[in-house]
Image (cartoon, rainbow, N blue to C red; front, side):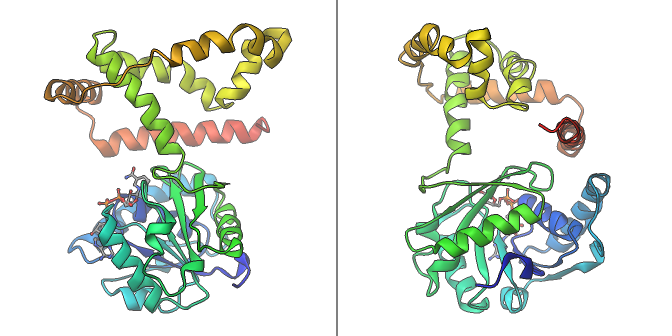
Length: 313
Ligand SMILES: NC(=O)c1ccc[n+]([C@@H]2O[C@H](COP(=O)([O-])OP(=O)(O)OC[C@H]3O[C@@H](n4cnc5c(N)ncnc54)[C@H](O)[C@@H]3O)[C@@H](O)[C@H]2O)c1
């Protein structure tokens, strides 16, 4: 494998929501990007996405030579991958489709290139199962949108080489991301398991009439969400323990916390519950389009990240 600083040409496979954001991020770092997507309006949508994201990326600082003009588009996978150093796959989240797509990517990409998937739920073991070079297949799971949210979960399968994982971590770090290497592959990796755990309880609370959808959103974003954006939940317990810190918390508060865990509920995803979620979300979104809401959220997150960087956190 070539060293991470050799990554110059990135191929984006699947240029929907996530692929477009990866493309914009790579372009802002001065890389040459080729995107492949068979959908009829994919190129138009991709270029429009990059143009919209550029303002935020420019405010964060562009690398020398960074330009949307370094973006090429093709509907042909082989053409996109023929000279790629790094491939980021973002196709539809369908197991058999992704297995076939990875086998095809493995066939056409240079053998020393790295094949990464943004998959939210599949493991690298599944993706590499039909590949001749499974050692270079990894999961690089971002949060939406990857050009704003720094976290990338990096995890391999049983046949992934340690060098491939190291190279992926170095590459994502070179894009200003915060790669976290998972030591074991699990469906949903870690972030989506945590989101599922929290949302399981939110759905249960709504189903049992404790709170509305809008109230649970406010509760998180005006409460623990503010703190979690600065320090993670375990370090928060140190603060919760006062001057006694985590030791006091462990003595006094960990047991009640664990006691509640035994009472957490399991929601029943009925039609009524689905409708309650849809109504609650539409009520909060009001007249704002998804793009307007995303732009507002992205700007606040970028401001927050800038504040964090300034305070050294
Ligand atoms: N949306 C999210 O919040 C999010 C977050 C993290 C990870 N992911 C993961 O990222 C991946 C993409 O999700 P998305 O939300 O961008 O989906 P999307 O539907 O917006 O985009 C998928 C794109 O893949 C294209 N495509 C279909 N067949 C293809 C092929 N043979 N070759 C190349 N491209 C093809 C489609 O035309 C479409 O543009 C999924 O694996 C998903 O789990 C999504």
